[in-house]
Length: 90
Image (tube, rainbow, N blue to C red):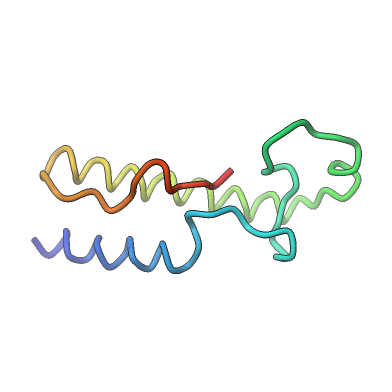
């Protein structure tokens, strides 16, 4: 029971921290290679390894958080905290 309550709080923090949406172009951690669509020479010319790593951390963290939510729903019959359609990380 305590784990479910703690995950509910964790999911709320994740949502407020903006993990469900991609970073805006004005954010210093923005990576153009995490945007959908074809890659042009402009993106590669301004590519920053550190920005890509930071974005990849966000994407992978959100993937694991979503998997924990799905596992809690399947194995513990908990109410899901995330809808697959609200997660827009790229």
